[in-house]
Image (tube, rainbow over all chains, first blue to last red; front, side, top):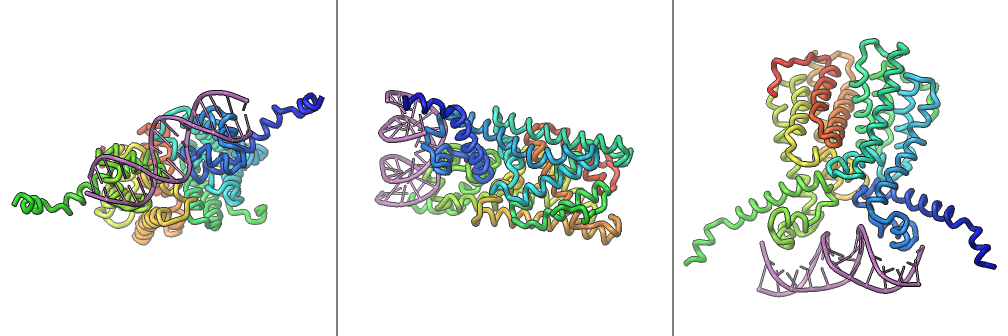
Length: 213
Length: 213
DNA sequence: CCTACCGATCGGTAGG
DNA sequence: CCTACCGATCGGTAGG
């Protein structure tokens, strides 16, 4: 009888909750130790689950890494991409995706800055499925920037001779430099500089009045 | 008698040569495995020296890491900074330091791209002497960019209202984005894009005639 | 999810 | 520079 009651606890839902808790910790650890430096043992200690208990959820380190990239991607989409998608198409989306990234850094959701900035440079020279998953997300994000810029150009919010590919490249560079600088110096003033750099590049005034933070 | 002849072989010079050979391999391995992923064992295998033979040269992993950062810095100075310093002060130096960086990537001196781009993002969240050594070199390079830009502005090669700090930030971003993109896609065409982006930002034409490569 | 293991490798040491 | 170690940790497995 008791065993039947226990079965009603939806062990699969519990399993998913545990798995998500492990992966959230994995993303956080990976921003400090890297995707390769991430170990089953340290993850076990951080979550309070036994080493093979952690391991059982994934079956191999590579599967753990792939799942970690996916969860990091979902968090990035929620924190950086979603706020931009809910804005007016064009320049507003372009500005908001950059500002959301800077706020994402300021809130220090993870101890080691942006997961993907680190993962791209770490996995770039390590061929395999994990690198491909990271590259896929990187391309997705750059393509999103490009589409925002293309729309802004078509709406006349950018010069008609603006080179969208070059603009995208520059904005991605500003984002990377901001992460590198912020992580190294832990100085939030760089985030204000980054905002001004983005606005200068897009020929937009620094509208302090509408700043939320 | 024989022992006295052997003593003339300058064992200290041999030791230094071995040490430099180890460190060159260490920089190369670190661009793939990271400064933290760099291990005495893999370094021993790569150089053909025993593990404790490698270890004896440094005394601790941290000392090995510090020496590796120093050697990486000397190579970067030789390959990227020196060509710029031998140019005419100002805009010419600014263009050349960027172009030298792009050529440095194209030649693929190390398998994992720019050592410092990777090291900054890897060590940023790992406080300690190694992070400080990396941060020191990063600041030195950014300060060099800033000085080149400041001189160019004073010589009237840049607009009189150019914000040198913001320009420096953008150029550093272009350099980082180029490394990230090149390492991920291993596609040299990104280096030509990067050259054009730098020239557009500095309002300089793409003078193909004077291109060496 | 657990305990209890496996062989390999880690940074580091002893002694030469 | 070497061989031969040390305890700790790695990814992974057996068996429950």
